Length: 257
Image 1 (cartoon, rainbow, N blue to C red):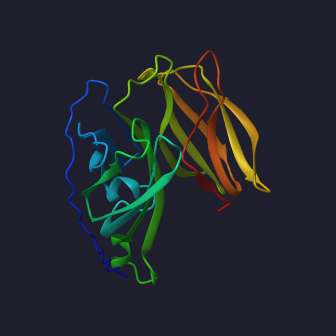
Image 2: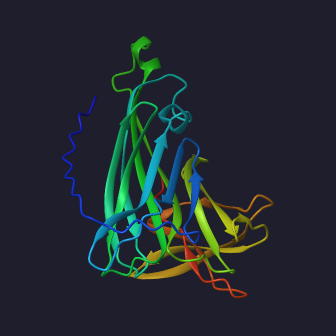
């Protein structure tokens, strides 16, 4: 059941102007067993040069992620598809992977002729696979393969000061709940601190349009929580309010089990 994953990486070095800036800022977020950190490197591209303006790092603990499926996890590995949304709204992608409790990282590469100043949103969709070790001792067990998916997201700023009214929704996490559903949580922050009693819309995508199916409020720790299931894509949405811009979480799936 083990899966061998090969990765081909290409490196490119280009001269750049390295200018540290106090405006650069970073954040991090966590799921039950996944931690995503993203930060500015302090390097800014010159007018005709390119540079790695940021770095993101993902650490995954498969035992914690798969704990609701087995108390004896073996041969675990994981992979993550990364989406980086740049200040101009365009997106680039990345790929990280690991075996067992492991970390992997990569950089965000920008050039001076691009719109590189501003906020970068980093999202990770993590697939975790393993083997239920209890299956080794049960005659009835013919397939002990176990798997789950987690979502974490965060952001960082390059060459620009975060606005005074800055909100975020990060740390998306999904776990099985009840007979058929899921419990999905996310952390809502206001100016870097947990935002309690913030109204959050749970939305699904129907015929290409996002529609609100439920409204929840965050608890004391700024945690938004939704229990349910449904076909298609879902997300948490913060409507613009009191000078704070609208924000969306990473997309998640909650199909009936």
